[in-house]
Image (cartoon, rainbow, N blue to C red; front, side, top):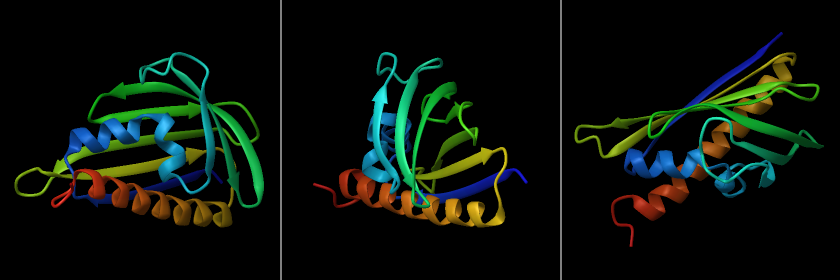
Length: 148
């Protein structure tokens, strides 16, 4: 069974700010519960072809993998792919202005990978919900209404 987990949230912060922050792998340890560290293998420019090595802890295991940015539309969409290891994974972020005035952001986070199980998919879904909740908290504190 292939794993395909889609999670979304609405963040009370401008789309450009949300997209710029979330698209930068350097920020991942701040908002991903399971990401321990990220180290760029190329220049730290968020662009197609850029590569970053991630260290994560997931389901009691230490995972090391390298994501390559394979698609990037600033402010709209980012696709990263890790092809090596026992569980190839593709992660896609999308962002769009949301609300009457477009001053909020609808963000989706999708993880797809070969192999897996219902248990793995459920664990990923729980982790993704926590990740997006943390991202929402961080960005609403920085950019949302009433932010300093």
